[in-house]
Image (cartoon, rainbow, N blue to C red; front, side):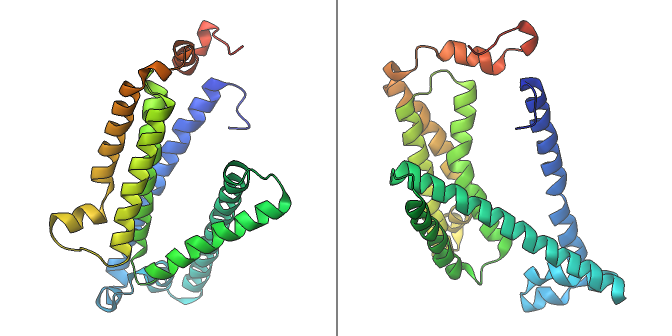
Length: 244
């Protein structure tokens, strides 16, 4: 968004990025189908995560397969390091400035250590868990917190700060609790196990409901200029509406 000259370009960028993400998430399905075809032995051993590295060699073979496998491995490590380092810096910045309220280098270093050690300890508990399950659980936590906030914040003028905080905390606590139970080997059968493995099916509606109810109960805290904010968000730029 830093390179977009105006709101129209930013919205166009958003649509394009969403489309590219949609196309990208088709590839894991295709990759999994090819892995089932070319490396079926991994299903028997339970090492299905190795499909990412073994599929190029099994499908192509020879030097070409080795080079393609090396390229896939390099891309995976690059994506892992870039994403994790970016998240580490972001979380450390939030902890040092908004939680500790100390905008200094030592505070940032301490926050970075905490932001790195805590996920590392949690990751050690999911060594034997399938990557697709872990990614799904991470998305469930994000959906239970950010999705209600973004949808209601953009489209509903009745959202209040207390309602938003209540919904964020409720969705976050419930989804994280479900993730911990799943990761630590809790209930795995029946409806309870299914909901714990896919908590977003329950936690997202609950977060929406808490935000709406909390905002209704604190409607006196709705900002006075919410109408103008909604116009700025949704009015076409051709109308000449500008932020002052």
